[in-house]
Image 1 (spheres, rainbow, N blue to C red):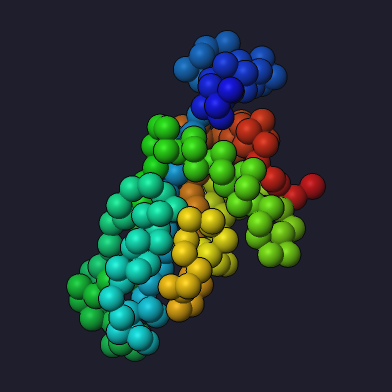
Image 2 (cartoon, rainbow, N blue to C red; image 1 turned 135 degrees about the horizontal axis):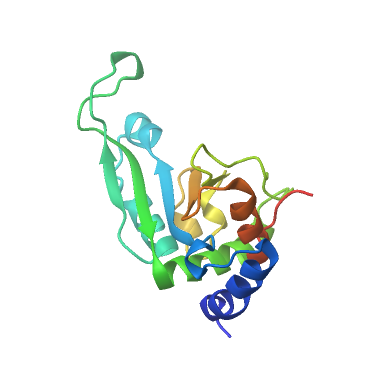
Length: 179
């Protein structure tokens, strides 16, 4: 049984029963997953083409990333307007479930000195954010092209604005929280 089928047939009904939710539409659900990489130092220090990092993120997410450019110039950071500062991908539906399954079961345990993810990383809208120090832990990334490993931010956008319900959903999915 795939992760998505297990999510729909087993996890959501069990979560509805455990939380005492009567309406099916009130069950907390994962709406999307956003992957972000900040690449400002890559462009500024080495002046290299960002296609290597774009290809790495495309291999991780199975879709082409969007390059985010600076909106205004900041002279102290040697940043000019229109300079690329980040790469981002939004995952939905099947790709989202495939990434989440791989992240929870394969990538999390591969992190060096893994001490589980903090259960305090919810933002003001109760979405969950976590950071990975090296994007090279993904098996899709070719190791010979790596100049420097880059941080990656992973945001799980939830459809319900309640901390306890969102945390219960992630625990039901098997997300590796700190005890």
